[in-house]
Image (cartoon, rainbow, N blue to C red; front, side, top):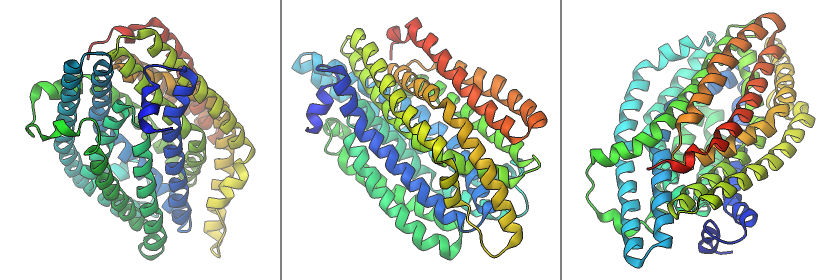
Length: 465
């Protein structure tokens, strides 16, 4: 099926089939990224649990800072999707105006992301060491983490632009081209990891990541110039504060949601680092999250499909199909992630063994054994929450596609800050690391159930962007 036919199914045609065909390139893209993460951690794991802990902490800080990019990307997706949807059901003149508006949103998003990324990158360079010390990394992990985070900080503008342009394609309903971009970038990342990490340590992994993002940006720009908004990109490249606010008023709450989610994870990791298991607990979480991503990466793909269906159908004035598309994407995500959760449970121990192998150092072997035990326990507990995580991901994607970011932010704040962290502190103190894993799983289940209530209230149907 051609890309144009697949995108046409967003506004008309069989709903379940349309959701499936729109989601599949994104699901495939996320699974490729997960495989890339496996390779990344596999090479890092050869350097020991301390290297795994360093990469886990640095990755969380990067996700925290990329929340600023999400502020722009979410707004871009909602606006471009609305314009494209409106243009497809209007006159030829209205369609031309809609495409021009979509191109204007794209230009302004690019300019805005460049400005923000430079500020974020400079700040990260200046305070990277205090941030890592704050996380409680021990004397073995800290020297590994600092150069890794420095390299990632210097590559912020490239990473921001890749995210923002990905938001443009999500608004267009084009999930095929981002998949092709991901294939190219993952190939570069994997080869770079294989060559650089054995030679210069985990800093080589950071260099490989930035190189892959440079390629991703180049490919995305090429595809953008062949997209429906290409003709309008020749307009004025000057930041317009009206457009900037229009983008940010949608995305700022989504960014805050990401900040809260990742910030709570950083605090959680700090608790683990200060527990009796120390770096072994942080490394176990990193291994666990990596395997768990097999389950939740498809959820991201369906979240993207839900956002496309909701944004374009609201733009076309078809609220009923927007609602049905959101639920179709969510139910498909639940089905896929439930199966993956079972796989996660059954194969927890064999997977963890891949990343926690023994060497000749007895002390390092002891830490690896402890990390292995903790990682297996995490995976078995986390597997229970996968259907509820799918529920939350699908419906939150739909809400963000509508430009409704307030309710998901409130839910994230309540479940991640006021429930997960106190519960984790209590259970960790009284029941050890297994208690901490249960705190994560239970808060995920609660958030998924609460999103149903928010979505059914229907406030998202009346949001103006």
